[in-house]
Image (tube, rainbow, N blue to C red; front, side):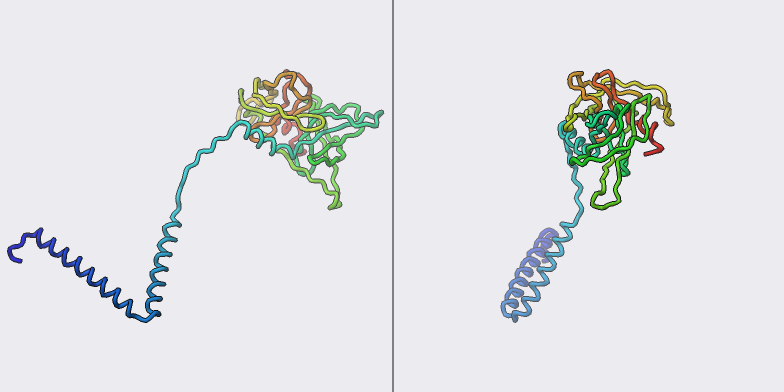
Length: 270
């Protein structure tokens, strides 16, 4: 030992430890083979529980993953229509001298109390009704009409009978003052069933009201949808499923009255 170097002493120590470990393992296995079954079962349970606990701790460690989801335009359009459709109604009116209801245009439920906004002709009509999603027909009362914009506010009938209760699903009115040129929009119209056309915002007219933020309010929105495809008395929706405009007429130049003006005109009522 006196003639061994430090490296040789370290290696000798490791060798002795290794041999001792092997000997200890052999002795332990021999004792377990000779031990009663109850002792070995207890040891196995301790080992199993230790392993289970270690696994559960390792798997419970929170993991943060990042996932990029690409939403295509057609998916966004389908989603927007699904959000808006329950709130869209077909408004009909009857002349005093006629027994038949005429289609006037699409309207939108803006309150669960049954308030409905539409940009439709109401002059000389004796009564009004609306076809809700699902086909239910309700009578409407004309509450107010803004001559300047042509917007009309109706209220659908209510019923205290639970069996005949009316369910009105309000649409969300979008921020029409925040509409951008080139933004994708959807036009909803159609007399018998809802028809969909898509395009972009092609023109924005501002003027008149100044918002508290200092921004001039949008007074008219035009889209790129051609005159052949423009739907009379239709509704303009953004890709978030929010209504941003109401149209009267079939010309592209007629444009849409922004939803912000709806709140300016009828905000205190709805």
